[in-house]
Image (cartoon, rainbow, N blue to C red; front, side, top):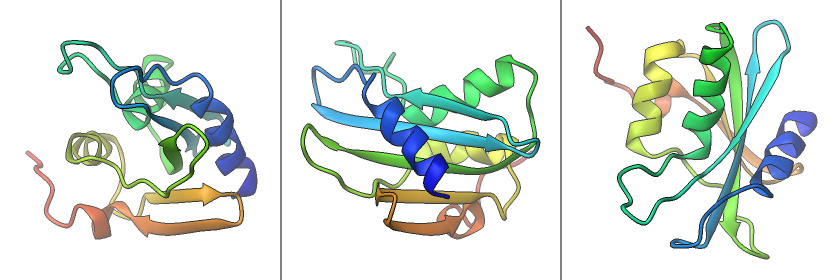
Length: 128
């Protein structure tokens, strides 16, 4: 768990967040142990912005990965750490690619975190 959280902490350093000043990093673990990282990337038009979680998931999917175990998320304004929860759009994207027991690790640090499943955070997600 600590390695995954540290990968998210490192990904946070690449955040492009000149508007919100809220830097987020994510690290996604695949079932084969591969880890994909992502950071939030903002845009002045806001709509084209992308969250760290979706960046990591889209990177993995674009490399042919579809079987995910857990994701670690860290965030906060520069110099601060909070344990962020995924936004609704990210939860729905997770629902597209992950099972209800997929673990979401919301971390302040490698020693201070909470784990919830996707089913707990999105109990009735939109599915076809």
